[in-house]
Amino acid sequence: MALYSEKVMDHFLHPRNVGVIEDADGVGEVGNAKCGDIMKIYLKIDNDIITDVKFETFGCGSAIASSSMATEMIKGKPVSEALELTNKAVAEALDGLPAHKMHCSVLAEEAIKNALEDYQSKQKK
Amino acid sequence: MIYADNAATTKMSQASIDKMLSLMNDTYGNPSSLYRFGQKAKEELELARETVASIIGAEPREILFTSGGSEADNQAIRSVALLGKAQGRNHIISTKFEHHAVLHTLDKLEKEGFEITLLDVHEDGLVRPEEVEAAITDKTALVTIMYANNEIGTIQPIAEIGKICREKKVLFHTDAVQAIGHLPINVIEQNIDLLSASGHKFHGPKGTGFLYAKKGIKLSNLIEGGAQERGKRAGTENVPGIAAMAVALKEAVDNMPETAKAIAAKRDRLIAGLSEIEHSALNGDRTKRLPSNVNFCFEGIEGESLLLLLDEKGIAASSGSACTSGSLDPSHVLLAIGRVHDVAHGSLRLSLGEDITDEDIDYMINSVKEVVTYLRSFSPIWRDLVAGKKQFIL
Image (tube, rainbow over all chains, first blue to last red; front, top):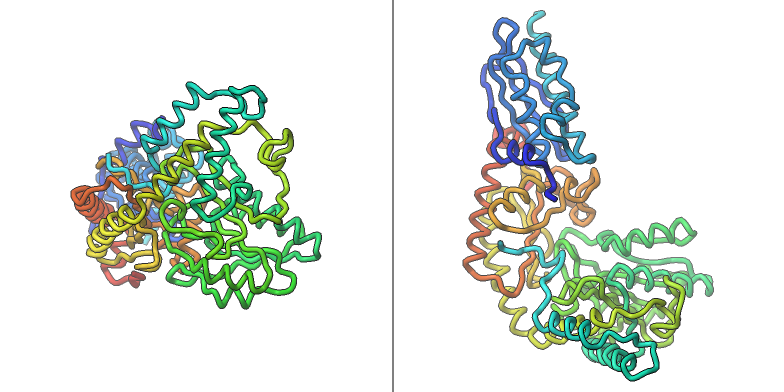
């Protein structure tokens, strides 16, 4: 049996939404280099709809796959819906992650919430 | 596939496979049985013991066959600890970058009341004999230092350490799992009292190994039962495996002068090629390393994704990143030579086999360059480093 599901490998080998949005409306970064995982999410939001999303990740295969899947899941969605994204949903969409890799999906959820919070705090100003 | 993980395990040699099959087919008797068919197996067992013993300069009775390197390490350290305890000696000296078979055994002994000193291995991954000498006290029962490191391949000054231990009348054990069959070893010349070896690291079968213990050192059992192995290791002997291991070791040692030179040339070509990658560094001393070992850190990337992408390109390699070690921390070996976490996560070990070609080396260099560049292209750490928001470490 392979280390990861086919879905994980697909998103790891062909990550969606890789890159940077220079004039992002919200940016979130979680993790640290010491632990070996950093995820950075960039959001473009128009009328409360996430019109574009990009990510950069330093981390293992499942971290990259989780970032890719999570960005796919929130693209085109209203902010309120994106805020409800859970790590479990990300892991399930990837057809599961090994137990010791579940924290990668947690990081993806946190990175997106972090970026959405950044967007909301900017809105209030 | 290019198999570049020979420090993890090696392919069995054809001679070793042939020996194993022939014994499984034709000599399956129990060596403890008294009839001829059993005694034939006993002969094979003792022939293997003589072969192994003569290769390292030992006597056959000083060789105890085990299931592998880990068992040999456990039994060597446990036995000497018990001997020490009986004499009121409760101090053991080792290093920070030993294999876990040694480190975890020492952890347990520490909980049982032993005092453990783990020596520094410095940035070059080499133990300093004078630091071994300085650490020895009248309570020291054992010095256990690996012959060559399994991750970074650095070769320790074993003969010098052995001499010091002999002068200080302290027993000296070396985990030679990575060295035997690849480097010349003589337990008398090098003053080695105990030595652990594993069959599958030199083209023998898995599940085989041996412990050399100088005569007069009383071993204690890890496995109780029958009187096999002079009563020190119960259980019917793995005769086909043991005989096949001896064949593989003999073959490796006979060919050593040529193969070591040829592999070292390939290693140097690989090191030169990978050194061209910016913000990378070789781990471990440049010259005092196994002929087969290459180990690099690449800043801004993580090792597991590097391995998976190399696997896609048909290269089997290894890394000391946390994700591959199964813990939150990266390799204790890389931390021991002073690599910080951020950098240690981006490590790659390529351990070469005898059949590697220059074309393979060049393909690996190009593949690693490509993958490192790709992973850096969307690494937030790399972006910060390039933008000057963070300082490069390498």
